[in-house]
Image 1: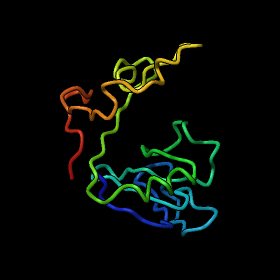
Image 2 (image 1 turned 180 degrees about the vertical axis):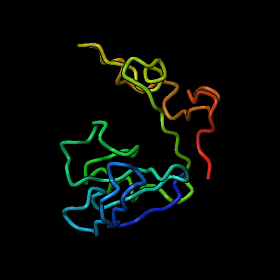
Image 3 (image 1 turned 90 degrees about the horizontal axis):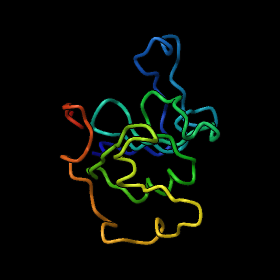
Length: 137
């Protein structure tokens, strides 16, 4: 669930070995969170922007989901505190990914056409969580 939203957040070092000497970084061009923070109610992770857009999509975060500035600013305006959030983890070959984001074959436009399941929300019983609670605070 979205627990908090912060416009121009301060980056706080995570409790991690690599960050033990790090200091908080105030809002501005050096802030790794970019201009927006959408925090979840579990694990001190969330969705945020970045001051290094070339890193979006790479596994260099401390568990967060990074977006380019214009996208996270748009999302920030669309969600409210209390909005449910489900994060699907896995690799490209994970079957759960195919269920919600079918791969498009070259020349196959069917994958882009709206279908009867568009707008469906994942049922928690369908999500891989290895028996662990998905979100708690």
